[in-house]
Length: 237
Ligand SMILES: [Zn+2]
Image (cartoon, rainbow, N blue to C red):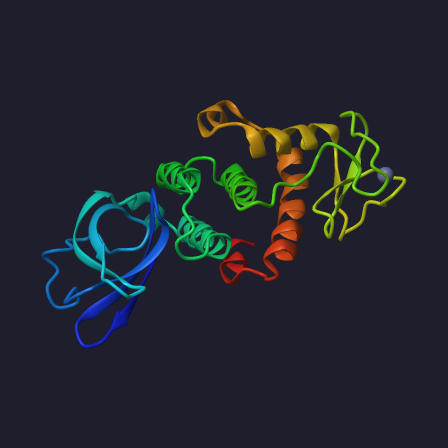
C-alpha cells in the first residue's frame, strides 16, 4: 500500500493481508539489495510475503517476497493511478492496523484487476466506495426514511441525509446540494452495489444518470463518516 525509507538501507512497508488486515513491517536492506524483494514492494502489487512478528514489537519483519500480479495497467495512465491511490487511502482510513477483513482484501484485489484492464472507470469508483464503506460498517440505510421512519417502498424520489447516513422522504428533507436526490432506480442500484457479491457486478451496468446521482451521495457520506476529505480525491475530479 505504501513504503517509506527507513534507516540507511531499509524500507518500512504498509501492506494489506488476507487474514490479518493492514500491517506494517520492515524490509531489511531492501533499498540496497533488490533480490529478496524483486519488484514486489512496488505500490499496487499483489505479492506473497514471508513475514514474522518479532516478540514484543508492533512491526513485522519481512523476510522475502514474490510478485503475483503487478497490475501494470494501473500505472499506464494518471486517472487509473489516482483511483488506485484513492482506494488505498480509503482502505487505510476504514481499516486501522490489524483489523482483518477478508472481503476487503478481495474487494481491493478485484478492483485492481478491473482497473488494470482499463475498463469501467466511471462505475468502478462508486462500486468500490459503496462496498468499502459497507464493509467498514457504514452501509447507507435505504429501507426507510431516516426522519419519520416511513418505509421506502421503492417509488418516488428520496433525498440523502448526510448526518443520518440514510435516505429521507421528501417531506422530511428537500433535495439540495447537501441532500442530493436519488431516483428509485438509483436507490435500487445503490442497494445492489452495497449487497451483491463482486461476481454479480460484471453484469451490473447502471446508466450515466444513476452514476451521476449516486456519486455525490457517496462523496458526502464518506466525508461525514471518515471525518475528512481524502487527499487523493482531488485528483479524481
Ligand atoms: Zn420522512
